Image 1: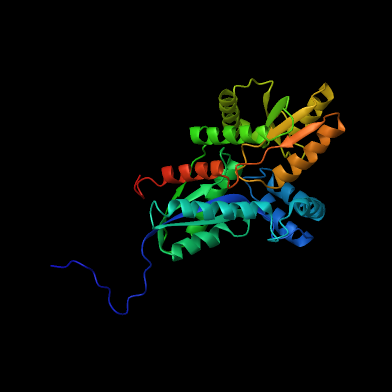
Image 2: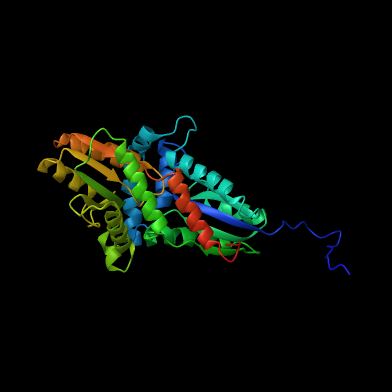
Length: 346
């Protein structure tokens, strides 16, 4: 006797149950002009997890000062690295490629998996892509913030936005948020092997290597944010894997903003000090970034290279992020398959 269920003729269409994977990176402006940059910076710098200042004071500073002068300056920085062929930022190009390659890697694993990508700030938005996955029949969605180290200012704000979107849905999918992978052996090996490969291609041997992570205000650490500790562990594991001590493989923090004290040592000040001390060759790797972006392509490869050369340094190399390389995709696929356990077969 057949037990097949037949829906009534007037039943609305129902998509077959699928499993969604949403890769999420920090964000990108749509263009380098003033108004595009202003929209992007306003969304980013209005996030209460990113800026934990007094709200009235920060509203005045943001709207009367920062959003008046900063969009043009940051627009010029983005213009230096802009992908002219696609008319978009490199972060958008790379994140799309990561999603496309992940979809191809997971297709033989389970045909029900649909992979998409979004930006926390800018487009495509998290809400729009969660809605698209839900409409495509995904009743289970894994959200993957592309940050190896957790911070409330990064991973947590992705979760905030995802759950804000869920609050608007009548039929919510089940959602998981992938945890950080700062000490995962697959990630450590990928960064180390990618670094070794890049160093082998250089025409010089760096005397010192900096592992530069995006900074956050020191106050966040004192309030209990684990980011600093996870960066330290990543650097320690990389040193052990590479066989280097702290004098040869140093941890620093970049991209500070405003007047408050941020996590130290600062990357730019360390680069300056090393050059002035007589270090002639330097390489910087950025293990906290899953994809090259303004902070790696302009701040590290541009600004910090200039600082190094201006203060007496000679040979400088900015090591590419894992991006959509074979090593990078191995890490992302590893994290995704691990976090989908129970939803798909091992």
